[in-house]
Length: 80
Image (cartoon, rainbow, N blue to C red; front, side, top):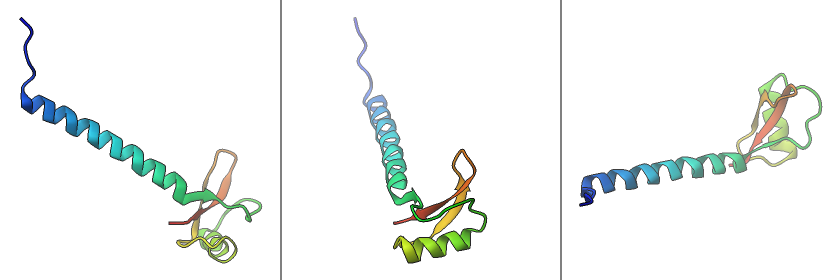
C-alpha cells in the first residue's frame, strides 16, 4: 500500500519551491536594473567617474560602477 506524504512534508516542499522562485525573480530584477553603459568608451577605472556619467548622460537614478565584463573593466549603470 502506498504511503501518503504527511502535511508537514508538503508544506516544506511548497516553501522550498516558493523560495527558489523568489531568488530567480530577484536575479531577473537585478539584470533589468543594471545595464552596461552605452556612452562609456574605454576601460573603466574609477567608479565615481562612471557613476557621474551614468547619472548625467544616461539618466541612471542610482549612478554606476566599474566591474569586469569578460573583456576588461566596463562601466555599468544602475537604473533602479
